[in-house]
Amino acid sequence: MALLLPALLLLQAPPPEAVQPPVTPPPGEEAAPQDWEQDIPPVDPAIIEGRQRPGYTAPLPDRIEQRNEGAIRAPPPEAFPTDQLPIPDRWRLIESLGLVKENLLDPYNQNTYKGDRPINPAKVPWLPITGDDWFFVANLISDSVYEPRTFPIPVGVQTTEDPDRNDVFGNDFSQVFSQTFIAGFALLKGSTTFKPPTIEYRVTLAYNVNYVDVPERRVLFVEPSRPSHRLDHFLGVQEAFVDYHFSQFDNDRFDFISIRAGIQPFQSDFRGFLFNDQQLGVRLFGSRDNNRFQFNLGAFWRLEKDTNSGLNAITKPLRDDFVFVANAYRQDFLIPALTSQFTVVYNMNREADDIEIDDNGFPVRPALLGTLRGREYDVVYLGYNMDGRLGRVNLTGSFYWALGEDRNSFFTDRPANINAQFAAVEASYDRNWMRFRLSAAYASGDSDPYDDTEGGFDAIFENPVFAGADTSYWIRQTIPFAGGGRAVSINGRNGLLNSLRSSKEQGQSNFNNPGLILTGIGADFDLTPQFRLSANANHLWFEDTSTLQVLRNEGSIPREIGFDLSAAAIWRPKANQNLVFRLSAATLLAGDGFQDLFATRGGGQEFVSILANVVLTY
Picture (cartoon, rainbow, N blue to C red):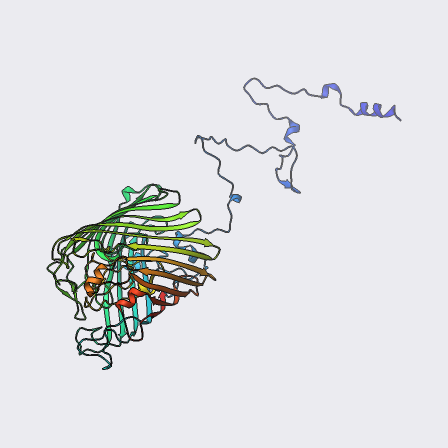
């Protein structure tokens, strides 16, 4: 069988002459298809069971030439997440995602009235704005204060509320209710997060209603026939300015230079010791070196104030009182983590010919002291202020030297040189939720009223945040200086200095004063993010009582004012500044000097002050 199979195959093979050799075409011509090739079907490139038919090679695409040298290949589509949506701009992000809908009455979430997103010019065609980078910001504040207190109240000369009151000082209880509504509106252009606006227009109005009740006549009104209570109201303009940003001075760190003109707030130092007010002026300010250097150049023309509310009275003539300011801040100067400020302030007063009577009928310029003649003065304040920390100790301080000339001293009617000093330092230490503070202040007093040198330090318009601030009895209350000075107070409301001025708001600076020495200790306890307790204790003295002795015609007056003890509780139920409730109490334990000046019925050794305050902010 094995021999038979090859033989059979040999018999079936075609003869040699039947096999045709392949025909080779001439050069340049394609070979003609053979008869057997014509019967082969074309290859089908279809996919069979997920595989390509063997032996098939698909034609290659046209070659792509890369002509962009240095370019990188774009990432494939799967590299991009599919859960992100394009949005028109960053301000409408939350609304585009459908997470929140704007409620104009909601101050906590996104709100066009709060400047959270730009104004749509199509909806306010009456505004002269173009573009999608204009913002509107509205601030509404309600500030309610109820304040019962006791302080030395002089008995009326012509008549009293009680015929039995025949002392110099009578009953000491009085109470105050004050309600202030503040409405601020701003229209600004530019990015509001990373750099200052290009231009800003701002107006802030304040409406105050106040009620005061005291036990004596001629305390609230000069006329003895007027009652011993008063209800008053006033509308003041606290801000009205234009702020222009010089964009050509910007850099990649968002340092800037701006100019602001109009009624504007200004604070000359970190704690408001010298000049802290809202006044009419022009100010050039800015920053450099990644905000490590800041500067201010300003000129202010002081507005008259309303007597009972302390707000700006723009309908009254401007005062002949001018303030020029130049200061510079430098971070990490002298030591790291300490910001140093050097300042020069020039106060030019030209009110010698003015006679100003306040709304209650009391003279305020000139003050009813000494010769009762008009005064004018030039004084330059040279100051160094610091704020920062030394290791773990927080440190803030101010040092001022006042130099100048009083054209007409009310003791001598002669020109007098001004040479006075001021210093204040506060150190605090934080430990967990507690802060412990030490405070000290010194304001020089005038040692000789007749030596043609006035050595008592006085500020332009102080409003200090120091040693308990307005929780403190001495800082919060005004103590009238009866006997030797009608309608004159030893200190001013919300002020630290014993300046013997007729009014902090409407009076002139007075460098014939007894000065001040203060030492204090205090602590803040943040029991929760919403609730804080504070306590403060200060010991106060007059620096020199020579001026008081002359005005009171007394041989000697002790220097001690007494101990000022205060405590406060602050509750913020939303852990922000939109709802703030504050209740504080303070007492002055009078020292020998205070008792000598204000000997009242019952001894007059303790005086108290209660402050209940509610602030609502939109």
